[in-house]
Length: 212
Image (cartoon, rainbow, N blue to C red; front, side):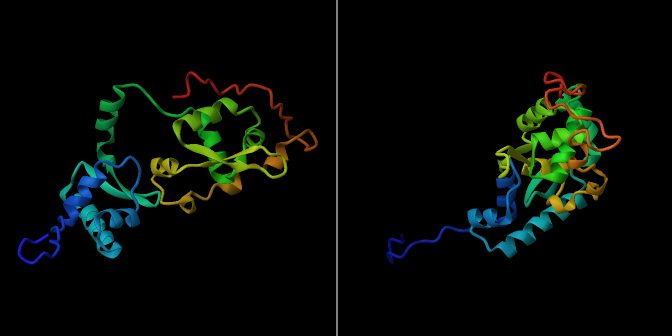
């Protein structure tokens, strides 16, 4: 309040770009333009323009990081050109990649979601329970309700999956779905040339202790 007039004194607005940088430094997932506009009290159009200007400035300056739009929001990432340096620092020579079994399972979920564990196992032809647990622990897949007919839990990919893949949405997934076998074609022995699937059989590719 002003001592002379009694009118409220408006706080000066912070410079938009530095404010965006400060906020984006502490986010643990991509921040949406709507949320950033609300937090900073700026029109979304002005905020969106500032984000794109920042992204262009970092690229023009050749910075070691970049501001990228992924999974419906914005977040800082290290620039791909410096991936080797970052990997050497973070992993210290150790590999932390998903196994082939986990990658195959994740692909089935991504293209068939929402999908049950039994459907995923049917597509791969082996029990995928261990691999699915790993993907859940990694935050790459999540529960998405239940199947009306059977009550089985359904699974889908997460925003973290989109973020790690560098995708804005599932519509940007490569066109690979037509090459995945139909689950119905591998469920049972009635299909000629298709091996039977034993849901209790272990996944020979999976090892809960060595999924990294």
